[in-house]
Amino acid sequence: MKVLLAEVNISEGTNLENIEKIREDLMKNNDLELIDKNSDKDHNRTVFTYKGEPKAVLEGTKRLSKKALELIDMATHKGSHPRMGAIDVVPFIPVKDVSIEEAVEISKEYGKYLGGLGVPVYYYEDASTRDDRKSLVKIRKGQYEALEEKLKDENWMPDEGPFEFNSKYGATVTGVRFALIAFNINLDTEDKETVKKVVKAIRGAKGGYKHVRAIALDIPEKRQVQISMNLTNYEETPIHRVYETIKSELSRYNINIVSTELVGPVPAYALKELLSFYIKLNDDFEVEQIYM
Image 1 (cartoon, rainbow, N blue to C red):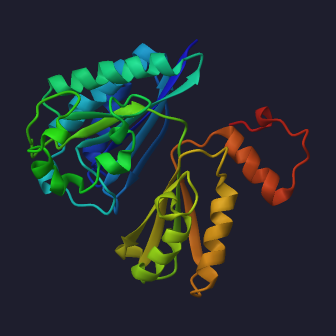
Image 2: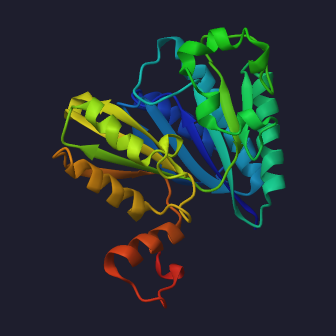
């Protein structure tokens, strides 16, 4: 069976009743496997990760999106994580016997559907229609607060949907990409400016690791600062390399790691690399030995 994975990021992480309603609509046909549902109230964001046959994933994503648009109002949204829309970003990831081209077709069917509901939609990564729209970071620059002005500029005409600002929906980014690892590190400090110096050392855009996107976020309830990262290619930049670099940079400022978070699913091959580094596994260890 062909398997496609989706990681849908919505701008709601505090209203558990609404999050559950969205989950119910996603799973109502019993043809998808929900791998993870991660809600973060500081980020005010939930990530649904699920997989299944491509058409089932498409239809489930449509159901999820329709309910999310009904329940989320971006005009009142506050959260520490960058965001641009009620349905913020929808990546599709080929898992088994699905080509990039097939996945792109699914993402564009989804984009047309969402555009038809009145949401401005931008395609990114392998589904992008322009070179300057491959990067999520570039598309989302300025976040929701800058979107009204951006939608007055011809350069920001969406790929799908209306070329006008909708205060309730915001805008959505969708496309196809390599398996991404969301990796967060929580620190025993409230000194965000110092943590930004550490972020600069690893962030690809600032001369760090090419496949690391990173920002410093306040976690006021815990009196901590978090380094929130997306590792966009774990083969070229593995988890342990990023972790050890951060640990080394933090030592300059006498800041310690309190805990780490892996948000959503993690490819087994990435875990094998992590195990190989820290406990020096023999080469004959097979990834199939990792199971649930």
